[in-house]
Image (tube, rainbow, N blue to C red; front, side, top):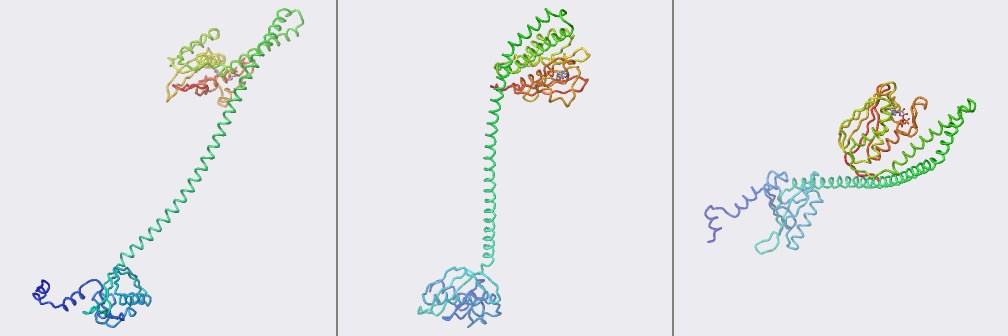
Length: 416
Ligand code: ADP
């Protein structure tokens, strides 16, 4: 007696009872069909699915009684194929369309039903509802599709943006190149201009010296010997020659800034300030000017240009003092990467609308009768400061003195 027979005998359960229990309680849909695909027997779960009270109600019915003809025809064809070939269908996922239009999904296995002799007398199958999983999968697929569309749209947006960016960069590079070319041209023409100013003023000096010395000779020899008008004419000529001399000297000084600029070195700005005071010794003494100078730092500079810068600013402070005794103060402070120098005076001051103009060549706020000058001094100052990589500006109120402020970088590459 084998183990299975032993167990069956023990609990007195027949094969029929086992099949009944199986069909009654298995949650999957189980069926047996004859060769014409008519139900012979179905499980309780399948009866529930068909909406039948009793599984026996399905006997002799076909799929056409339950499902849409489309689905029933497909199932019929599958089953006939199994009967004809003996080949089972295993775990096929198929859509069921019901007569009322519902759609469900099952994973189904169908095999041939054979009698004891092995002849195929129908089919039997088992299927499990996988609608929930399928719906989730479909939703996931749709979501993936949607995501892919989003990614595609975003990618094309990004591609368009990148292309635009590349176009912008190319245009910008072109503009930068053009700008660099223009800057080079400007630099060249500035240098040409400075050379021209240098050569012209240098060459003018000789004939001017001649005019000046002969007009002075005329003055010495004939003043008082001719009539009053002739004396006046001679005075005009002497004055004109002197002014022209000053103008040419200033122009030469200006053009020499870049043509004759020395290379930069570590310079004690205190020394350059002292040198400027020494150069202006006479003017300071004549005006009784009082200078107070802070302790000044060491900088990378062209020493003689720094001296000239201080000298021009001190000279102006003395010249534009009005009725007062000139008081000049030099202070320095350290801000970021710069030294900030300030030269303050107690002079006549400047109206804010002229703050920019006074740094341009030949721009003067006074007539020659009021104050002598050529209008080149501050242009020289600006050129020197810019050559050192700094900036210069003025702060002032009319009648309340002026502050000329300039910066010198604490460390810098030398400009060629
Ligand atoms: P110049 O002194 O030969 O006229 P500058 O270029 O040195 O030429 O100065 C330009 C103008 O700026 C001067 O004509 C004057 O009106 C004004 N200026 C310069 N320095 C001072 C100052 N310290 N106080 C008042 N005005 C000044």
